[in-house]
Length: 312
Ligand SMILES: Nc1nc2c([nH]c(=O)n2[C@H]2C[C@H](O)[C@@H](COP(=O)(O)OP(=O)(O)OP(=O)(O)O)O2)c(=O)[nH]1
Image (cartoon, rainbow, N blue to C red; front, top):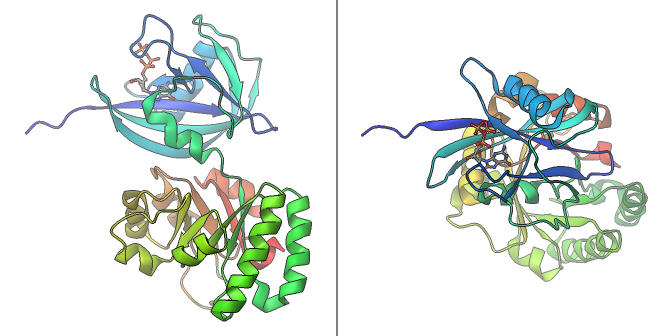
C-alpha cells in the first residue's frame, strides 16, 4: 500500500514577555478559511523547518526571527492532507508583526483564548501553552513540612505556577495532609499541583492531576481521569508511551548527574534532544539542573525545567 505523503509545516508561537501569543486568521482563499492558526506555512523542498519558519514570518508578518526554540511536533490527518506541524516558540524578533496577506491578527492569553474556531490540530497546543517553564518538585520530608510550606509560599509569591508533590518517605496520612495543604496554598496563588503516583489520593486532596511513574506508564491501558496527567520518562520508549496514553506532558531524566543517584548514568543534553525532538507533548528536563539551565533546556527542545532541591 502506498504511504500517504506527509506535508511538513512550520508554525510559530510568537510569545511576548507577558505570556501572550499571536494567532492569525486564515485568509479566504485558503483551505480552512476563517480558522485561527499560528503563523507559518509549508516547508519548501530543500528547506529545514527552521528556515521555513524564518521565511514564512518574513513573508506573512514582515518580522525577522531572532530567537526560536524547537518545541512540539504534531502529526494530524485532515481530509485534505496529513500534516506534520513543527511548532517553534519564538521569543525575540525585530520589526512589528503586520498582516502582509490581509489576515486578521489577535494576541491571546493561554487560559482565555477568545477567538474561534481554531484549527482542529491546535487544541493540544493551546493547552500546552498553559504550562509554565518551571515545574517544582517537593522535598518536604528532607527539609521538614513547615519549612517546606514556608519555602513553597515564597516560591509562589515569586511566580511559581506548577508543583509536584513527590514524597517517598512519608506515611499515607502524612502525605494526604501535606498534599491538602500544598493544594490549598498553590490554588490561592493560581498554581497547579500534581501528586506523584496516586490517582485516587490526587482526587481526594483536590490536586489538579497526577504525575505517573515510569512503572505506572507500563501498566496503564487508559489515561487516568485527571484534569492534568504527566509522566516520568527516562528514554524514548517511555516518552512514546506517555504520548500514546494521552499524557499532557512528560519529565525526561536524569539529564545530568544527581546528588540522589551518584554515579548513575545520565542522558546529557545531546541524548535529551534526540529523545525530546519530535515529541508531541511538552517535555521538562530534570536531573542535576539549576535555574541557570533554563535557556539551555529550551535550546535543546525542552518546554522547561523541573527542579527538586534547586527549586526551593
Ligand atoms: N500555519 C499553520 N498551519 C497549520 C496550523 N495548524 C494546522 O493544522 N495547520 C495546517 C493547515 C494546513 O493544512 C497546513 C499549512 O498549510 P498552508 O496552506 O497554510 O501553508 P502555506 O502558507 O505554505 O500555503 P500555500 O502557499 O501552500 O497555499 O498546516 C497552524 O497553527 N499554523
